[in-house]
Image 1: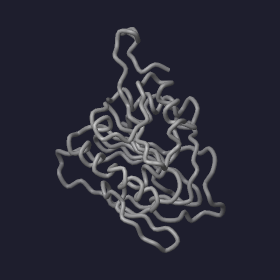
Image 2: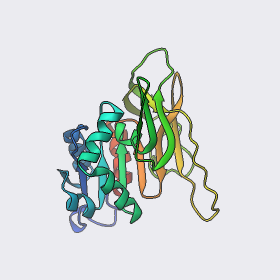
Image 3: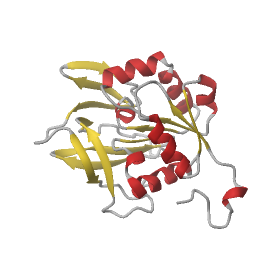
Image 4: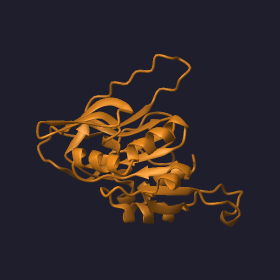
Length: 224
């Protein structure tokens, strides 16, 4: 798949610079390969200036919510994400990198504050089998940019035991675009992806989701 329009040769366009933020809690190499596959100029780093100046910042995440938040803060990732979004600079979170964008996470009865970009609580999934591991479809909203060009039965790869089960953000200003929320179901509905201005995120792993994941990353790169 190409991130360029048919009218413009790939060689004639500068590749978008994407930093995969390396704070010790994400499969950064898989993310790097997936982004390079769709034509991005990718760098893995925790350097403040490089992360701030990239066209796009991708925040991966695996493991416990609390550990990811601690690692992110130690690497000043919370500051970087906040500063980029304040300036309308694109950020994308993946898996726990999405979860930490919410207000809080609860694991084993312990509550940890998240980045609070969105209200909501990351909680254990109520499902017969946990973790939710494998391929699943999603229910994307009309007008989605993230899932553009993908069939309704496209499948994505999930690995998680926790999720946001309730979306509570309301937009009172009629001049502001409401976030687009995508849902999936495993035992119960949960938030699978969010598109909110410069901030996009997925609970699943696009870098492990084959051609469907590549198309999704292509869509994101195309907005940078």
